[in-house]
Image (cartoon, rainbow, N blue to C red):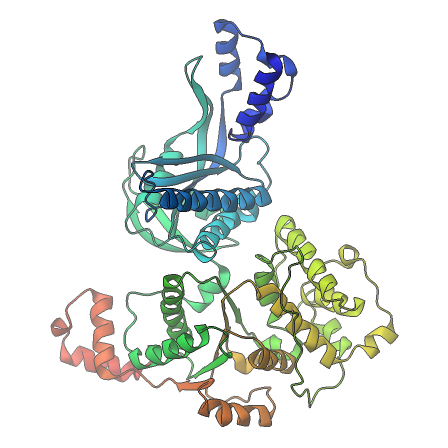
Length: 557
């Protein structure tokens, strides 16, 4: 019965590689039996060499054993289905393909590709493939609490059918594919490892940390490998094996974080000050690594977002949200959901009454002052739709949409399709802008059980951003705000004196505000740092050399 066969054929396509589906589904006469010579010729014609981005994802902690019991099997299938849904959703969003979803000697392994028919684009690695890799890796950890290791390569590969006439499959084969599997399986894999070819294609947009080269099948010399970092991670720094000291400070930060994680806990604000070069950013990076481990143990959904203030930021209202807002928009659920309405606060807005639109004209995301770089058309369009939906949910006025989209994020005016006259601009005061920005932040992060907002060099942060941060501090639950700043004897915060007094009195007394002042490293800590740097035991460090280093550095990391 050809109708039954066609029905089964359509069902099979649900579990078949999209490239195969595109080849097979074109005509209805494919069901006829082909003779062997015709089938062989077709396989040869469809085989090709393509430049393919390959992603191997391994989840080593998942034991895919069935038969342990009905409840255990149901839980396993539910988990596997969640992994498949999450991965395919993100691949579809970035226009990639899922090659395989298998369990083998390496455990549960997913293979995804970019560069096959239907998924080849200009700037494919920087605009689609590598961003998709980062999103999938983070979402598996944050949303499903699944530890995963990813190996990524790009290179020439055979793409076509392998096997016999009666039993065959579509495959992607080549040295670069083998290398991706090798990188995935490395015990030293910190989460994501990429090849030199990926770094070369993405080096202008992404930052990478070089690791020790490895030997790999198909390569005559050791292969260079790298860990991808976002541009902001490059400036904040990364986890370093040479980090020493600061145990008391990290303990204090973790204590504050544990309180903020508790169910329905009030927000906490952690303020770290120190001289330039004292290691404020490095301390926060290491502390946040410990916080992530703490969160992952409890399998809590969380959102960590960061911003580094620049000297020009002090002149730009809402400057921190140029990076924070696009970041928190990326995983928002667009559909309207039932839940507690977003509450507003009556926190004072004294000191600012009107919004200086001329200031936005001078220092907007379109001006030469800004170093804002436009995102890929795929990602920015997606976030634009998300932001419009959020602002629509909140019934935001047109002038606020214009402020956010055009002046702050740098989207072209024709894509926003909203015009504001002078009367609208004058009537839209700063208090309502702050109010809506707080609502947007709450709406975008309400899926998370715990939120970390990390702000570096806040002595350069503008006054309006400070008002938003304080409003978040007063209204958002389970929020940890981490600020770093130069010593306040040298710099003045764009913060109301009464607000700073409140933080250092009543909020300090109830534990919601903690101020940590970084001092210079102790002499023993400098000895430990020298030993780690030179790969020696501490007792092998010459005392006179140690004293010279400590004297010259003055205990500054």
